[in-house]
Length: 292
Length: 292
DNA sequence: GTCGATTACGTATTACGTAACAATT
DNA sequence: AATTGTTACGTAATACGTAATCGAC
Image (cartoon, protein in one colour):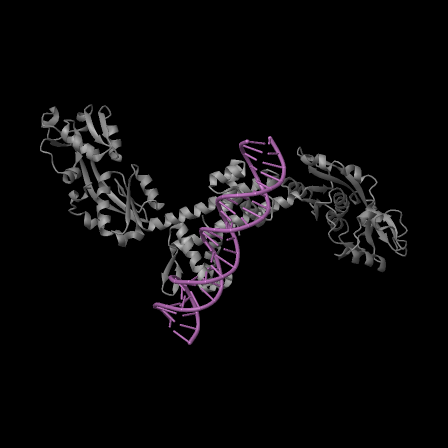
């Protein structure tokens, strides 16, 4: 039976040109390589090299064998990767959501319910991308901002999120009881990155605003306190991070500032994940803050 | 690095159901199998079995691994076969012809010109099959009964073959100086099998004849002498086997009883095979009889 | 003289089978 | 009691590196 290591050695020899160089690369001695290739030729019953006194050159058979060897090793790699991936997928809950808030909740909920599982989270803006990824088992659970109608998938509402603008009391707009995107457009606004579909909402509704995007959440929170720049908050982030006495929160009245999140997962997971809707009732968002 | 033998063992275990049965099939001890599978799991960093005290069962990972193992072993088999095939093809001249006579000649000619090569011969009735097979390098040289017009292929006439009927002098038709298929139709005729396109000629032109087909050429030749049955011969077989004093040879006058053979091979072989046309001139067919 | 490949040889690793054991049916 | 899988252990196969050899540049 072929030895995959011999095939690997063959490929390295083809690349290196000589046995000695290949042996250096492979961290073995030249004699060992000589013997390996003899063995391989024995196994195949085919001469792979033209041997001169102190030179060994791949012949036509050898060139062909190299091509096939790569295919075989590829297939073997493939096996390892896919089996490992499959194994890992069974030990991992992978979440993806169109916005960060659902991830905060689900991360916390799953971590407590399935402490032995590892949990990954992604943000994917597009709802249909989320669904196809769910169907392809790239994610265990996804969260969209519209209900999903699909025979294989369970989808129900998790919670609502409403957008506010947070302003310093001295800001000219701070006296309003509610506000529209149109009224905000043009303001410089502090923004957190990786906010999923909210990003598109901003670009569409306040195209003339200068958006100061910040990657790091803790830096973002510091800037919020230290600067007088307006920034977006929601009913969720207020519960999560608490109120800020130096700020005024003004609800945004546009339709697109009000979102409903829908969780979606395969029906086969109904029993395992059915508890989520109950856990989301009166959910304590403060728990979702990571203390680092 | 994976061990292909371990993959093979895994597959056998999946088929056999238990380690002990698999060990019997593989002609090794159970402990050896236990260790092999432990190694394989180590290599993959993945559990492949659910282990109970005296029972070992493939888990989901294992089932998946079996599928991939089959793919890997297939690829390895593929490598062996194709490399061996390629090697052999370089040491073999494979001939195919629409009738046996050209094979007799080419077999002899190649054997003398390239004594180190091994030579195979086939009979393929259909001309276009012959050409596609030649183009796919399944054959080195083919012989058709019509000239081939193709840019990559050299094709020229080798020789002609004319059909005769061989009759005992007492036969009612034996006085004719020439004869047609129509006149022959209905006669019982002794026939050699594996005669290529001649077979179709017979079926089309003497559909009412009873054809007594004989596989073995030497048996056929004996029957020819011992029986009084008519049998077909040609200008070639007469030269090859000599005349038979007890028989009358009457040429068949139909157009389809006269054939011209055309050899065809790749242009890249022009230099190696150019000599053939010369060798075929005044070819001594007696040489082509195999003395067994 | 240096470099590259092979051969010879002693050693270290590895892989195997037997035997003993544990647990299930 | 018979079957199945694992562990322990001594042995046999093997694969390796070092050293020596032979040619080529």
